[in-house]
Length: 384
Image (tube, helix red, strand yellow):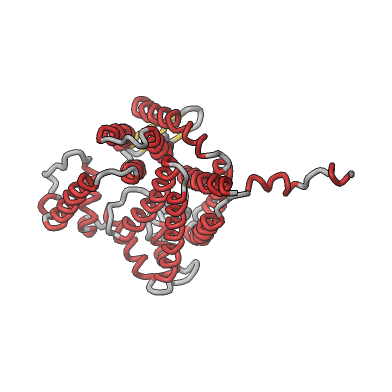
């Protein structure tokens, strides 16, 4: 009889919190985190406490992921409007009384210094997924117009700070939701065609339209300079072009198998700028070569594939839209970072997920993973 009243063990008490976790998604994240720790140890070897801080940030992100995974998608949907409203209000407050550093007003002091735009990376897809869930079964063109307004408001405030990198991430997350909600291809194709024509014209007539006396509507001078430097980094080899030139040299010098762990000359002789943050992919490529890059890309592809599978199997429209948008946000992070370091995209300050140093970005990634885990977990628990 006494056995029936024995106190449960610690594992028996915490086991329910782990039931339903997506093992495949977790393995993909662990693989990328392992590569991130190895790379940070080398790239940040002489940069103070970068390696232990990076490991701490990862643990914090895993903690956030675990906690958010316990929240059912229905509860997450209830947070959509409040989180979006607070995020936009903080962006307005930043524009009015934010902290300015290096010409950018991106931070706000609310007892602690925060960067409100980070909130919108999650709040934006949450809000739009909530909106389309409410309109399920009766979607009209006006509903997509409202969604675009909801998206344009925070993106415009972030661009004004200016913070082009975060604006791209928030914009892409919102557009992914709108696309998955069923936006007509007749509206998508013309935008793609215009974009292709603009890029072609930029490549062909770059020397002419990049002259100093020509202004680009909607872009600041430094943003124009970034694009023009991308077309020909040698026009400013010691300025904006330095990042691109050194990144490409490091990637090319890695060859097939790389120079070896802790043996990257471009990295350790400090030729690579921001080698622990935005340009850590160059340091990774130099030391681990094409083989290492393939293994890194496979990790991201597996993460994205698993995330899209979770989205496809989600039971509600809200869950499907949210999971799909968050998953493709990881793609945007990786594609833009690798593209700008490789010299095929402008330098916009987007980190490489789980590899680049940065506490705020890591916590945001953990939050996104927690939402994916929550959606996958709820489906598994419903099945059992």
